[in-house]
Amino acid sequence: MSRVEEVFPRISPKEWLILGLLIGGERYGLELVELSEGKLAKGTVYVTLNRMRLKGLVESRLEELPPDATGLPRRLYRPTGYGQRVTRAWELAGAQPAPSGVSG
Amino acid sequence: MKVGEGGESRIGFDERQLEEQVRYLLSLRLKTQPSLVNGALVRDHLDALLVALRNGKLRDEHEFDAFIYDRLAGAGYEQSAGAGLLGKRMLFGKPQRAAWRRFVDTFVLRRGRIVRAPGHLMDAVAEFFASPETYKHVFQELIGDLREEYSRALFDERKWKARWIRFAYVCRFGASVWQHGIGTLVQGFVRMFVGPPK
Image 1 (cartoon, chains in turn blue, orange):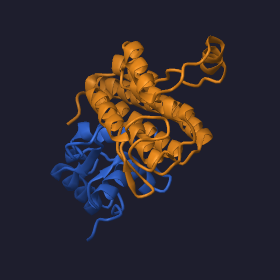
Image 2: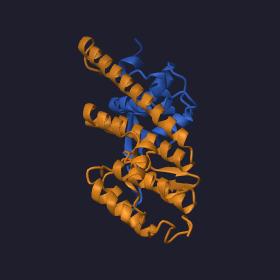
Image 3: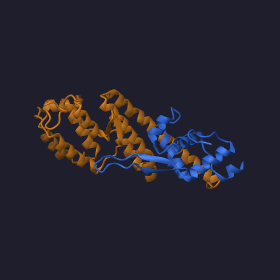
Image 4: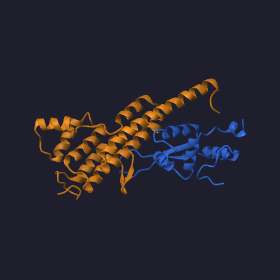
């Protein structure tokens, strides 16, 4: 077992892809599906995001709407500081390729 | 006057007044999400309706009624539908039809039938069975997406696509339940045999 594996949780390929997409900025679920070019499914992206939220890799907030707007706002996701550290650690360990949008 | 020219429409109501009234009703309990359709911000069926009205996309009052019924019922107004919809019908100034015609409209042509917003059953099932957190972060988002795509399809007058979207999202809902259930089961086994996560 590598040192990284002892300290940080494993990231599945889907989680890795989502983290890569989120590094570009806050995004909502449907947007992530569209950007993933078929690698993420509409039916399961929220389950994955919820799992990542429970792991502390991402956090979410509700989109702000104008005062006269009706309906529920979208939920926007972004990586947490911990999520970014985990991503960086795995990337440095060479176990995962750099997610798209990650420089260096 | 043609629908969509603003002010009083051809079916005899003040569009702005109706918009305010329906907005108020819908603001009480609405579970939809915003979307962008042809450059206009469309937040739900009501907005899709209003944009469609302005653009003259709705052809007749049956389509209009169907939208309003759908919105009111989708917003949880089925119980008070009697007074509410009667009021709306009077506001529409629609002539009363013969009993046989109402029967045909309701049960054969399904016009003016009270229908709920798409995903209402999935919403109820998820709200009952899932934990509040899971419901909020997984299922409510999924149903929001369904309504967004459904509204887009309706706005584009693609009824069959809208129907297909409803069906596809039932499958996606099933996939979500399956994946969430399997995930929870695996986590339970991991906790049982390996211990809590680090």
